[in-house]
Amino acid sequence: MHLASVREGGDELAAVIHPVRGVALVRDLIPGFSGDLLELLATDSLGKLESFAESADTAVFRDRDSVTFGAPYRHPRMLWGIGLNYVEHASDLSEGVPDEPASFIKGDHTIIGPGENITIPHQSVRTTAEAELGLVIGTYCRDVEPEDALSYVAGVVTLLDQTAEDILEKNPRFLTRSKNFPGFFSFGPEIVPLAEVADDAGSLAAVEVSTVINGKVHRSNVVGNMRYSPEYLVSFHSKVMPLYPGDIISTGTPGAVHIKAGDVAECRIPGVGVLSNPVVDQEAGSGQEDGIHQEGHGGHE
Image (cartoon, rainbow, N blue to C red):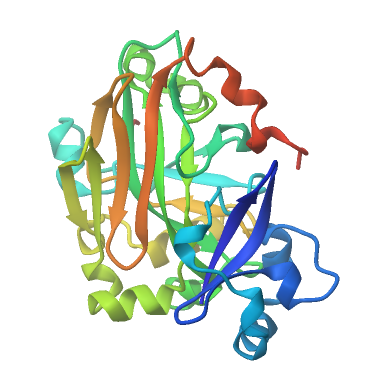
């Protein structure tokens, strides 16, 4: 069973995607529930939710093609990004792979969902899109070892991480600024259980991540070619600070691609999904910050 959010009017409603029955809103499965997926993760309700989805009336389900998906949730407590994690990508940039994970933090104001605009800021003339595998933390996680780390992961998700590359090239200390413009973190449409993805690919190491622009695969690589594995990244960051349900670790990209207005950027991960976002310049997309994702408040890779 996958987790997602469905757009209805001006709202994004927590939903599940059953492999046979279709899409159902969580509020139709758990009486009295009115929160988002982040709240669902925080209350540890996933186990009973699956049982409810199996026994619920057929009438609460709808066909997947009849719904529009939004970002799974809008206000995670923490977004970790990892730079230069694929050895081949670091080599392309004539940079060495760091001796420890090169991580950075993004604010939730950067979040957009499937189909929403990636806006190129007027301060940048060279922005990149970077497809990545995202790890969604499912339970409180602190000081865990790599061999136990993946048991704290609720699932994985496709995401696109953007960088104002020209700003970053001025000075590596500008990493935070170059990564934190609105629209610079897209994720969705669904969160897929880790075990399901690993089983489909044969192993987590065999999962392939591709950066796609205008339908063309520009860069692709498998998780096994990461310098720092997903389990190591969870362990490493849990020893820096606590990880909470809904926190996301963006594990690095096989390759960044320059984007311009009119492009369509995609992250493709077999078994996880396809995330697609159109690209606009700031003038054309200036109204986006007032959209649905702002309601409420909750290295270049």
